[in-house]
Image 1: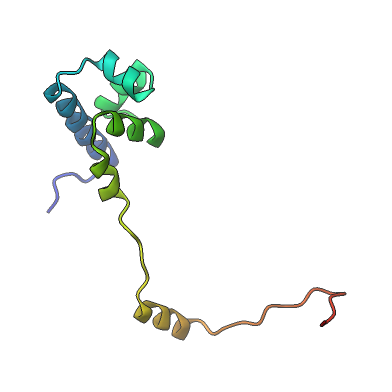
Image 2: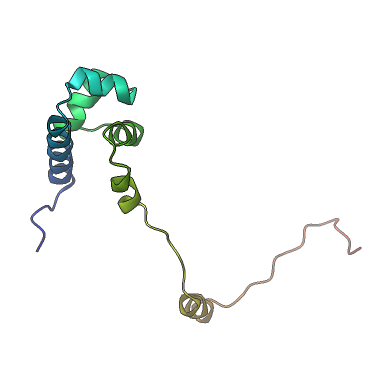
Length: 105
């Protein structure tokens, strides 16, 4: 079972990972914040697992050269033909109602 259950625990874990990446690259918080185009406080909040915007997270990950993190968070979503058939079975098609005053041309 996954040891991270709450949103707060995930925020803490992500913040710690970002801090480790920054330190491995030997980059100061102020320098990374400047490279990422975010405020120093936003970066500090991110590293401490406090709420930040998705925009700040994306900018920091890009500045750290970790775009693959973003790709792993947003995999290609597709619907299989079987799922389409199943959804059609559950709800019958309904006709679109015509607006008054619209004539067939």
